[in-house]
Image (cartoon, rainbow, N blue to C red):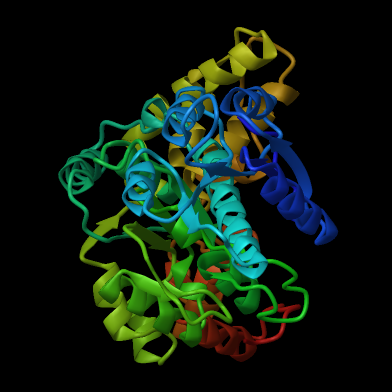
Length: 462
Protein backbone atom coordinates (compact mmCIF):
# COMPACT_ATOMS: atom_id res chain seq x y z
CA UNK A 1 0.00 0.00 0.00
CA UNK A 2 1.21 3.52 -0.70
CA UNK A 3 1.03 6.29 1.84
CA UNK A 4 -2.23 8.31 1.91
CA UNK A 5 -2.36 10.73 -0.99
CA UNK A 6 -2.16 14.46 -0.50
CA UNK A 7 -4.16 15.61 -3.51
CA UNK A 8 -2.32 18.95 -3.60
CA UNK A 9 1.18 17.55 -4.22
CA UNK A 10 2.84 16.31 -7.39
CA UNK A 11 3.41 12.63 -8.05
CA UNK A 12 6.41 10.72 -6.67
CA UNK A 13 8.09 9.06 -9.66
CA UNK A 14 10.39 6.03 -9.94
CA UNK A 15 12.38 5.88 -13.21
CA UNK A 16 13.72 2.40 -14.07
CA UNK A 17 16.08 2.21 -17.07
CA UNK A 18 19.57 0.75 -17.60
CA UNK A 19 20.54 3.52 -20.03
CA UNK A 20 22.42 5.86 -17.69
CA UNK A 21 22.31 8.85 -20.04
CA UNK A 22 18.57 8.57 -20.67
CA UNK A 23 17.82 7.92 -17.00
CA UNK A 24 19.80 10.89 -15.68
CA UNK A 25 18.50 13.31 -18.33
CA UNK A 26 14.87 12.38 -17.77
CA UNK A 27 15.24 12.43 -13.97
CA UNK A 28 16.85 15.87 -14.10
CA UNK A 29 14.07 17.33 -16.24
CA UNK A 30 11.30 15.81 -14.09
CA UNK A 31 12.96 17.18 -10.94
CA UNK A 32 13.14 20.61 -12.57
CA UNK A 33 9.36 20.39 -13.16
CA UNK A 34 8.73 19.77 -9.48
CA UNK A 35 8.43 15.98 -9.27
CA UNK A 36 10.14 13.91 -6.58
CA UNK A 37 12.18 11.42 -8.64
CA UNK A 38 13.95 8.19 -7.67
CA UNK A 39 15.96 6.17 -10.18
CA UNK A 40 17.02 2.54 -10.60
CA UNK A 41 19.30 0.97 -13.19
CA UNK A 42 18.22 -2.63 -12.57
CA UNK A 43 14.99 -4.51 -11.99
CA UNK A 44 16.05 -5.66 -8.51
CA UNK A 45 16.88 -2.10 -7.45
CA UNK A 46 13.46 -1.02 -8.70
CA UNK A 47 11.73 -3.72 -6.65
CA UNK A 48 13.64 -2.67 -3.53
CA UNK A 49 12.72 1.00 -3.98
CA UNK A 50 9.06 0.25 -4.76
CA UNK A 51 8.79 -1.89 -1.61
CA UNK A 52 9.03 1.28 0.46
CA UNK A 53 5.53 2.23 -0.66
CA UNK A 54 6.33 5.89 -1.42
CA UNK A 55 5.99 5.72 -5.22
CA UNK A 56 2.97 6.92 -7.22
CA UNK A 57 4.12 6.39 -10.83
CA UNK A 58 6.77 3.92 -12.07
CA UNK A 59 8.35 4.31 -15.53
CA UNK A 60 9.67 0.82 -16.31
CA UNK A 61 11.85 -0.03 -19.31
CA UNK A 62 11.00 -3.32 -20.99
CA UNK A 63 14.67 -4.29 -21.38
CA UNK A 64 16.89 -4.30 -18.28
CA UNK A 65 20.26 -5.89 -17.62
CA UNK A 66 19.14 -8.33 -14.90
CA UNK A 67 15.36 -8.84 -15.23
CA UNK A 68 13.17 -7.95 -18.16
CA UNK A 69 10.43 -5.38 -17.59
CA UNK A 70 7.63 -7.95 -17.80
CA UNK A 71 9.14 -9.96 -14.94
CA UNK A 72 9.58 -6.81 -12.83
CA UNK A 73 5.95 -5.87 -13.55
CA UNK A 74 4.73 -9.32 -12.45
CA UNK A 75 6.67 -9.04 -9.18
CA UNK A 76 5.35 -5.53 -8.53
CA UNK A 77 1.80 -6.76 -8.98
CA UNK A 78 2.45 -9.84 -6.80
CA UNK A 79 3.67 -7.52 -4.02
CA UNK A 80 0.55 -5.35 -4.44
CA UNK A 81 2.57 -2.20 -5.09
CA UNK A 82 0.03 0.59 -5.52
CA UNK A 83 2.06 2.80 -7.86
CA UNK A 84 0.84 2.91 -11.46
CA UNK A 85 3.30 1.41 -13.97
CA UNK A 86 4.00 3.07 -17.34
CA UNK A 87 6.11 0.87 -19.62
CA UNK A 88 8.93 2.39 -21.71
CA UNK A 89 9.35 0.62 -25.02
CA UNK A 90 11.85 0.78 -27.84
CA UNK A 91 11.23 0.20 -31.54
CA UNK A 92 9.80 -3.25 -32.22
CA UNK A 93 8.55 -3.95 -28.68
CA UNK A 94 5.02 -2.56 -28.96
CA UNK A 95 3.49 -6.06 -28.84
CA UNK A 96 5.31 -6.71 -25.58
CA UNK A 97 4.06 -3.39 -24.20
CA UNK A 98 0.48 -4.42 -24.98
CA UNK A 99 1.13 -7.69 -23.15
CA UNK A 100 2.29 -5.58 -20.19
CA UNK A 101 -1.01 -3.66 -20.24
CA UNK A 102 -2.85 -6.98 -20.00
CA UNK A 103 -0.67 -7.87 -16.99
CA UNK A 104 -1.61 -4.71 -15.14
CA UNK A 105 0.51 -1.86 -16.49
CA UNK A 106 -1.42 1.41 -16.65
CA UNK A 107 0.05 2.74 -19.93
CA UNK A 108 3.12 2.67 -22.19
CA UNK A 109 5.30 5.23 -23.97
CA UNK A 110 7.60 4.66 -26.93
CA UNK A 111 11.19 5.90 -26.58
CA UNK A 112 12.42 8.49 -27.23
CA UNK A 113 9.46 10.22 -25.57
CA UNK A 114 8.93 14.02 -25.47
CA UNK A 115 8.83 15.39 -21.92
CA UNK A 116 5.37 16.87 -22.42
CA UNK A 117 4.04 13.35 -23.19
CA UNK A 118 5.87 12.01 -20.14
CA UNK A 119 4.28 14.66 -17.93
CA UNK A 120 0.80 13.96 -19.31
CA UNK A 121 1.33 10.24 -18.62
CA UNK A 122 2.38 11.04 -15.03
CA UNK A 123 -0.66 13.21 -14.43
CA UNK A 124 -3.08 10.63 -15.85
CA UNK A 125 -1.53 7.75 -13.92
CA UNK A 126 -1.40 9.78 -10.71
CA UNK A 127 -5.04 10.82 -11.08
CA UNK A 128 -6.03 7.19 -11.66
CA UNK A 129 -4.20 6.23 -8.47
CA UNK A 130 -5.92 9.04 -6.53
CA UNK A 131 -9.35 7.95 -7.75
CA UNK A 132 -8.66 4.30 -6.85
CA UNK A 133 -7.42 5.16 -3.37
CA UNK A 134 -10.23 7.64 -2.74
CA UNK A 135 -12.77 5.08 -3.87
CA UNK A 136 -11.21 2.42 -1.62
CA UNK A 137 -11.43 4.77 1.36
CA UNK A 138 -14.99 5.75 0.53
CA UNK A 139 -16.07 2.16 -0.04
CA UNK A 140 -14.73 1.30 3.42
CA UNK A 141 -16.57 4.31 4.82
CA UNK A 142 -19.76 3.51 2.91
CA UNK A 143 -20.06 -0.15 3.81
CA UNK A 144 -23.47 0.05 5.48
CA UNK A 145 -23.94 -1.34 8.99
CA UNK A 146 -26.06 -4.43 9.48
CA UNK A 147 -29.44 -2.85 10.19
CA UNK A 148 -31.38 -6.10 9.90
CA UNK A 149 -31.75 -6.48 13.70
CA UNK A 150 -33.12 -2.91 13.85
CA UNK A 151 -35.88 -3.64 11.32
CA UNK A 152 -38.48 -4.78 13.85
CA UNK A 153 -42.21 -5.37 13.72
CA UNK A 154 -44.94 -7.97 13.47
CA UNK A 155 -47.94 -5.87 12.40
CA UNK A 156 -49.68 -6.52 9.09
CA UNK A 157 -48.51 -3.14 7.77
CA UNK A 158 -44.91 -3.90 8.70
CA UNK A 159 -44.99 -7.40 7.22
CA UNK A 160 -46.30 -5.99 3.95
CA UNK A 161 -43.28 -3.66 3.77
CA UNK A 162 -40.91 -6.54 4.59
CA UNK A 163 -42.35 -8.76 1.85
CA UNK A 164 -42.21 -6.00 -0.77
CA UNK A 165 -38.67 -5.11 0.23
CA UNK A 166 -37.56 -8.70 -0.23
CA UNK A 167 -39.03 -8.86 -3.74
CA UNK A 168 -37.59 -5.51 -4.84
CA UNK A 169 -34.10 -5.88 -3.37
CA UNK A 170 -33.01 -8.64 -5.75
CA UNK A 171 -33.78 -6.47 -8.79
CA UNK A 172 -31.88 -3.44 -10.09
CA UNK A 173 -35.02 -1.30 -10.34
CA UNK A 174 -35.03 2.29 -9.09
CA UNK A 175 -36.96 2.52 -5.83
CA UNK A 176 -38.76 5.52 -4.32
CA UNK A 177 -39.32 5.25 -0.55
CA UNK A 178 -42.17 7.33 0.86
CA UNK A 179 -42.91 8.05 4.47
CA UNK A 180 -42.99 10.64 7.23
CA UNK A 181 -39.89 11.89 8.97
CA UNK A 182 -38.44 9.29 11.32
CA UNK A 183 -40.13 6.16 9.93
CA UNK A 184 -36.81 4.61 8.87
CA UNK A 185 -36.49 5.38 5.15
CA UNK A 186 -32.69 5.24 5.23
CA UNK A 187 -32.83 1.90 7.06
CA UNK A 188 -35.06 0.51 4.29
CA UNK A 189 -32.64 1.82 1.65
CA UNK A 190 -29.75 0.16 3.50
CA UNK A 191 -31.61 -3.14 3.55
CA UNK A 192 -32.39 -2.85 -0.17
CA UNK A 193 -28.64 -2.56 -0.80
CA UNK A 194 -27.66 -5.31 1.66
CA UNK A 195 -30.05 -7.80 0.06
CA UNK A 196 -29.12 -6.95 -3.54
CA UNK A 197 -26.44 -8.29 -5.87
CA UNK A 198 -24.60 -4.99 -5.25
CA UNK A 199 -24.10 -5.74 -1.56
CA UNK A 200 -20.30 -5.83 -1.97
CA UNK A 201 -20.30 -2.40 -3.65
CA UNK A 202 -20.48 0.99 -1.94
CA UNK A 203 -23.65 2.35 -0.37
CA UNK A 204 -23.54 6.14 -0.68
CA UNK A 205 -26.02 8.43 1.10
CA UNK A 206 -26.70 11.99 -0.08
CA UNK A 207 -28.95 14.33 1.93
CA UNK A 208 -30.36 16.55 -0.81
CA UNK A 209 -31.96 18.93 1.70
CA UNK A 210 -28.70 19.67 3.52
CA UNK A 211 -26.71 21.08 0.59
CA UNK A 212 -27.02 24.23 -1.50
CA UNK A 213 -27.69 23.57 -5.20
CA UNK A 214 -24.09 24.19 -6.35
CA UNK A 215 -22.61 22.06 -3.58
CA UNK A 216 -25.08 19.28 -4.29
CA UNK A 217 -24.20 19.30 -8.00
CA UNK A 218 -20.50 19.10 -7.15
CA UNK A 219 -21.11 16.28 -4.66
CA UNK A 220 -23.18 14.25 -7.10
CA UNK A 221 -21.34 14.82 -10.37
CA UNK A 222 -17.90 16.10 -9.34
CA UNK A 223 -16.10 18.95 -11.04
CA UNK A 224 -13.06 19.64 -13.18
CA UNK A 225 -10.22 21.82 -12.01
CA UNK A 226 -11.13 25.45 -12.66
CA UNK A 227 -14.84 24.72 -13.16
CA UNK A 228 -15.68 27.53 -10.72
CA UNK A 229 -13.97 29.76 -8.18
CA UNK A 230 -12.36 27.54 -5.59
CA UNK A 231 -12.22 24.43 -7.80
CA UNK A 232 -8.45 24.09 -7.46
CA UNK A 233 -8.37 20.40 -8.34
CA UNK A 234 -10.48 17.74 -10.00
CA UNK A 235 -13.14 16.22 -7.75
CA UNK A 236 -14.84 12.91 -8.43
CA UNK A 237 -18.58 12.91 -7.76
CA UNK A 238 -20.54 10.44 -5.68
CA UNK A 239 -22.05 8.87 -8.81
CA UNK A 240 -18.49 7.73 -9.62
CA UNK A 241 -17.87 6.63 -6.04
CA UNK A 242 -21.12 4.62 -6.03
CA UNK A 243 -20.29 2.80 -9.28
CA UNK A 244 -21.32 -0.89 -9.01
CA UNK A 245 -23.19 -0.01 -5.81
CA UNK A 246 -26.21 1.96 -4.60
CA UNK A 247 -26.71 5.73 -4.39
CA UNK A 248 -29.38 6.79 -1.90
CA UNK A 249 -30.85 10.27 -2.46
CA UNK A 250 -32.60 11.28 0.75
CA UNK A 251 -35.16 14.12 0.50
CA UNK A 252 -35.04 14.03 -3.30
CA UNK A 253 -38.05 16.38 -3.48
CA UNK A 254 -35.78 19.22 -2.31
CA UNK A 255 -33.69 19.17 -5.52
CA UNK A 256 -33.82 22.07 -7.98
CA UNK A 257 -35.06 21.78 -11.60
CA UNK A 258 -31.47 21.86 -12.90
CA UNK A 259 -30.40 18.96 -10.72
CA UNK A 260 -33.60 17.09 -11.55
CA UNK A 261 -32.75 17.40 -15.26
CA UNK A 262 -29.27 15.98 -14.67
CA UNK A 263 -30.62 13.12 -12.55
CA UNK A 264 -33.08 12.26 -15.31
CA UNK A 265 -30.27 12.09 -17.86
CA UNK A 266 -28.17 9.78 -15.67
CA UNK A 267 -31.16 7.49 -15.15
CA UNK A 268 -31.91 7.41 -18.88
CA UNK A 269 -28.36 7.04 -20.23
CA UNK A 270 -26.13 5.93 -17.35
CA UNK A 271 -23.82 8.83 -18.28
CA UNK A 272 -23.04 12.32 -17.00
CA UNK A 273 -20.44 15.07 -17.20
CA UNK A 274 -18.56 16.63 -14.33
CA UNK A 275 -19.14 20.34 -13.76
CA UNK A 276 -16.91 22.16 -16.22
CA UNK A 277 -16.15 18.97 -18.12
CA UNK A 278 -16.88 17.81 -21.65
CA UNK A 279 -16.09 14.09 -21.34
CA UNK A 280 -19.01 11.76 -20.61
CA UNK A 281 -18.53 9.30 -17.75
CA UNK A 282 -20.44 6.00 -17.72
CA UNK A 283 -21.55 4.53 -14.39
CA UNK A 284 -23.53 1.51 -13.24
CA UNK A 285 -25.42 2.72 -10.17
CA UNK A 286 -28.70 1.66 -8.61
CA UNK A 287 -30.63 4.73 -7.51
CA UNK A 288 -32.80 4.61 -4.41
CA UNK A 289 -34.50 7.84 -3.34
CA UNK A 290 -36.77 8.94 -0.52
CA UNK A 291 -39.01 11.83 0.45
CA UNK A 292 -41.53 12.76 3.12
CA UNK A 293 -43.40 15.00 0.68
CA UNK A 294 -46.28 14.26 -1.68
CA UNK A 295 -44.50 14.23 -5.05
CA UNK A 296 -47.74 14.19 -7.03
CA UNK A 297 -48.71 17.49 -5.40
CA UNK A 298 -45.22 18.83 -6.12
CA UNK A 299 -45.63 17.80 -9.77
CA UNK A 300 -49.02 19.56 -9.95
CA UNK A 301 -47.43 22.75 -8.57
CA UNK A 302 -44.57 22.51 -11.05
CA UNK A 303 -41.93 21.89 -8.38
CA UNK A 304 -40.97 18.39 -9.50
CA UNK A 305 -40.55 16.83 -12.95
CA UNK A 306 -43.13 14.19 -13.79
CA UNK A 307 -40.73 12.32 -16.09
CA UNK A 308 -38.15 12.11 -13.28
CA UNK A 309 -40.83 10.85 -10.88
CA UNK A 310 -41.64 7.95 -13.18
CA UNK A 311 -37.93 7.11 -13.49
CA UNK A 312 -37.38 7.24 -9.72
CA UNK A 313 -40.56 5.37 -8.86
CA UNK A 314 -40.20 2.20 -10.91
CA UNK A 315 -41.13 0.64 -7.58
CA UNK A 316 -42.63 2.63 -4.69
CA UNK A 317 -42.24 1.53 -1.08
CA UNK A 318 -44.46 3.37 1.40
CA UNK A 319 -43.42 3.07 5.04
CA UNK A 320 -46.42 3.43 7.38
CA UNK A 321 -46.13 5.83 10.33
CA UNK A 322 -45.76 4.33 13.79
CA UNK A 323 -49.29 5.38 14.81
CA UNK A 324 -50.63 3.02 12.12
CA UNK A 325 -48.75 0.02 13.53
CA UNK A 326 -49.03 0.48 17.28
CA UNK A 327 -48.73 -3.27 17.88
CA UNK A 328 -45.05 -2.94 16.89
CA UNK A 329 -44.34 -0.47 19.72
CA UNK A 330 -43.76 -3.09 22.50
CA UNK A 331 -41.26 -4.95 20.26
CA UNK A 332 -39.42 -1.74 19.47
CA UNK A 333 -39.38 -0.67 23.13
CA UNK A 334 -37.97 -4.05 24.19
CA UNK A 335 -35.27 -3.96 21.51
CA UNK A 336 -34.04 -0.43 22.19
CA UNK A 337 -34.31 -0.81 25.97
CA UNK A 338 -32.05 -3.86 25.72
CA UNK A 339 -29.54 -1.86 23.68
CA UNK A 340 -29.47 1.09 26.09
CA UNK A 341 -29.17 -1.30 29.04
CA UNK A 342 -26.00 -2.68 27.47
CA UNK A 343 -24.66 0.81 26.81
CA UNK A 344 -25.44 2.16 30.30
CA UNK A 345 -24.70 -1.13 32.16
CA UNK A 346 -28.23 -1.17 33.59
CA UNK A 347 -31.16 -3.57 33.82
CA UNK A 348 -34.15 -1.25 33.38
CA UNK A 349 -37.55 -2.05 31.96
CA UNK A 350 -40.76 -0.13 31.18
CA UNK A 351 -43.62 -0.80 33.58
CA UNK A 352 -46.87 -1.86 31.94
CA UNK A 353 -48.69 1.44 32.57
CA UNK A 354 -45.75 3.37 31.07
CA UNK A 355 -45.79 1.04 28.06
CA UNK A 356 -49.54 1.67 27.66
CA UNK A 357 -48.87 5.41 27.41
CA UNK A 358 -46.25 4.78 24.75
CA UNK A 359 -48.79 2.76 22.78
CA UNK A 360 -51.41 5.53 23.00
CA UNK A 361 -49.14 8.36 21.88
CA UNK A 362 -49.34 9.34 18.19
CA UNK A 363 -45.56 9.64 17.58
CA UNK A 364 -45.35 12.52 15.11
CA UNK A 365 -41.58 11.86 14.96
CA UNK A 366 -42.17 8.11 14.48
CA UNK A 367 -39.49 5.55 15.41
CA UNK A 368 -36.79 8.23 15.70
CA UNK A 369 -38.85 10.01 18.36
CA UNK A 370 -39.59 6.71 20.12
CA UNK A 371 -35.87 5.90 20.41
CA UNK A 372 -35.23 9.40 21.81
CA UNK A 373 -38.02 9.02 24.40
CA UNK A 374 -36.75 5.59 25.47
CA UNK A 375 -33.21 6.88 26.01
CA UNK A 376 -34.35 10.05 27.78
CA UNK A 377 -36.66 8.12 30.11
CA UNK A 378 -33.98 5.59 31.02
CA UNK A 379 -31.38 8.28 31.69
CA UNK A 380 -33.72 10.35 33.91
CA UNK A 381 -35.34 7.42 35.74
CA UNK A 382 -34.16 6.76 39.27
CA UNK A 383 -34.96 3.07 39.36
CA UNK A 384 -35.01 -0.20 37.46
CA UNK A 385 -38.61 0.37 36.35
CA UNK A 386 -39.61 3.19 34.01
CA UNK A 387 -42.93 4.58 35.30
CA UNK A 388 -45.30 7.11 33.68
CA UNK A 389 -43.75 10.03 35.57
CA UNK A 390 -40.42 9.24 33.87
CA UNK A 391 -41.93 9.86 30.42
CA UNK A 392 -41.93 13.27 28.68
CA UNK A 393 -44.98 15.46 29.29
CA UNK A 394 -46.16 15.14 25.70
CA UNK A 395 -46.39 11.35 26.04
CA UNK A 396 -48.02 11.49 29.50
CA UNK A 397 -50.75 13.80 28.17
CA UNK A 398 -51.52 11.57 25.20
CA UNK A 399 -54.51 9.99 26.98
CA UNK A 400 -56.31 13.31 27.18
CA UNK A 401 -58.90 14.21 24.55
CA UNK A 402 -57.53 16.57 21.93
CA UNK A 403 -58.02 20.33 22.53
CA UNK A 404 -60.81 21.47 24.86
CA UNK A 405 -64.02 19.88 23.57
CA UNK A 406 -66.69 19.22 26.18
CA UNK A 407 -69.15 16.35 25.80
CA UNK A 408 -72.39 17.71 24.40
CA UNK A 409 -70.85 21.12 23.68
CA UNK A 410 -72.52 22.83 20.71
CA UNK A 411 -69.92 24.71 18.65
CA UNK A 412 -69.95 26.59 15.34
CA UNK A 413 -68.07 24.82 12.55
CA UNK A 414 -65.46 27.60 12.49
CA UNK A 415 -64.69 27.03 16.18
CA UNK A 416 -64.45 23.25 15.70
CA UNK A 417 -61.96 23.84 12.88
CA UNK A 418 -59.98 26.36 14.94
CA UNK A 419 -59.69 24.02 17.92
CA UNK A 420 -58.76 21.06 15.76
CA UNK A 421 -55.96 22.95 13.98
CA UNK A 422 -54.67 24.20 17.33
CA UNK A 423 -54.78 20.65 18.73
CA UNK A 424 -52.79 19.23 15.84
CA UNK A 425 -50.17 21.99 16.13
CA UNK A 426 -49.80 21.27 19.84
CA UNK A 427 -49.41 17.55 19.19
CA UNK A 428 -46.58 18.11 16.68
CA UNK A 429 -44.96 20.79 18.86
CA UNK A 430 -45.51 23.55 16.32
CA UNK A 431 -44.05 21.69 13.32
CA UNK A 432 -46.17 23.23 10.56
CA UNK A 433 -44.94 20.89 7.81
CA UNK A 434 -45.97 17.88 9.91
CA UNK A 435 -49.28 19.52 10.87
CA UNK A 436 -50.07 20.23 7.20
CA UNK A 437 -49.53 16.57 6.30
CA UNK A 438 -51.79 15.38 9.14
CA UNK A 439 -54.49 17.89 8.19
CA UNK A 440 -54.01 16.96 4.50
CA UNK A 441 -53.60 20.56 3.39
CA UNK A 442 -50.66 22.35 1.81
CA UNK A 443 -48.39 24.39 4.07
CA UNK A 444 -49.61 27.56 2.34
CA UNK A 445 -53.24 26.69 3.15
CA UNK A 446 -52.26 25.94 6.73
CA UNK A 447 -50.82 29.46 7.08
CA UNK A 448 -54.06 30.84 5.67
CA UNK A 449 -56.04 28.85 8.27
CA UNK A 450 -53.82 30.23 11.02
CA UNK A 451 -54.52 33.76 9.82
CA UNK A 452 -58.26 33.11 9.44
CA UNK A 453 -58.57 31.62 12.93
CA UNK A 454 -56.28 34.19 14.52
CA UNK A 455 -54.00 31.46 15.86
CA UNK A 456 -50.46 32.31 16.98
CA UNK A 457 -47.83 32.08 14.22
CA UNK A 458 -44.28 33.38 14.66
CA UNK A 459 -43.00 32.38 11.24
CA UNK A 460 -43.77 33.86 7.85
CA UNK A 461 -45.71 32.08 5.14
CA UNK A 462 -43.66 30.29 2.46
